[in-house]
Image (cartoon, rainbow, N blue to C red):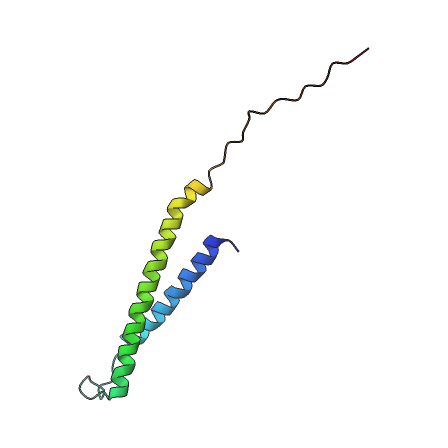
Length: 97
């Protein structure tokens, strides 16, 4: 697998993880569970989910920045290298009759 494809799959996986965390964080809180009546365990769970979402978002931003940097360098890596043509050309020795 090429490095570009691996990076693309890794970014897609991180995007899926971020979307999953964002959906969980965006789910509505039940009417009986407003912020005043949340237990300590539920509040801690929500805080962990929010911090995980933030860490995932930061990791995706870092990976995207790295990918952009690699894309800038890519044009230099794929340009053809001019071969060294300063080699003597073979000439056959003169024929003796």
